[in-house]
Image (cartoon, rainbow, N blue to C red; front, side, top):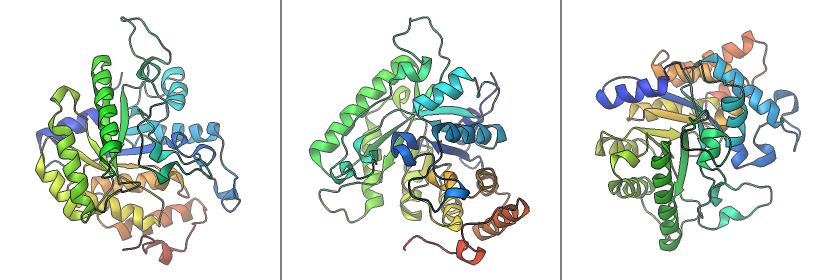
Amino acid sequence: MQTKSLDTKIQRILSDSTCQDFILADAKDADMAFGMAAPGTDQQHRDEPNRFRTVQEYRAIMRQNVEQGLLDIMLMSVSSSEVLTINERLFENSPITPAIRANDATDIWMAAGGVYRDAPALPFRTATLDHALHGKAPVSADQKPCGADLGLYSVTFNNDLEADTRTLNAYRDFRIEAEQQGFRHFLEVFAPNCLQSPVDDLGRYTNDNIARTLAGVAESGRPLFLKITYHGPAAMEQLVSYDSSLVVGILGGASGTTFDAFHQLWEAKKYGARVALYGRMINNSEHQLSFIQHLRWLADGDIVDPAEAVRSYHGALQEQKIEPYRPLDQDLSSAIAP
């Protein structure tokens, strides 16, 4: 089994806070949330509503992105991981680590016409660790895992005593089960989906909840790293400086312009983030391999300016005769409201 870049980078980051290692993940677990729309659309059908790639096409893109070799993690649903990790052994001779989404709480239930996200998130898990590790259940005690031994577990705090207590109890139970099975996890903390009481400083509210959630967790049960909504420089600096044993990462969120994606990574890294997990931003790009290449260059400091990265990306599209979704001047601006 080839050494995984994730393991090497985590060790270096924890032992030397000044090192410049950066962990990059492709989040291809959207079938746990969006259903039909999860695979996205290709350029030929981009303007056709309800015309999406198939799951098989979605997995073919995962293969291409893994074979490129620039990522550190490929995040998938258990069903996709069974195909790629267990059946095909795609990651056996790859530096990239396979990971699965370990829970799917109600705040990511995105069915067309659904109203699940209008209420505070409730904990729920479709995935089982036996299926993630072995592709079946039950398994004998001496059976060695052949699947993914890393998973994302997400929590959402809504300033609601009962809902947040249920969320924390479910996370505790998961941690215990994961530790017993030798299953590693990283913790995703979403922004509130349905705040029950106003919060003046969302970044501070999130940081406080992360700190108190993990304060009662021994090292053997703690997450490998964090994946959080990016709340800006001040909140990132505060969390990173609080505990040097926490490796902090960001989630990409909804697609904007190419500048939005590149600038978010660049700025988050500047203020202490060491991980970025991009899902829709990668999946909805004109050419995923070129997009990942430019994320990698930004993450590693080979390109030091987000605008320069946008121009370079457009140049790569031009070389491959791929029409960009937006003219360069529009793609150099932000679509995200300040």
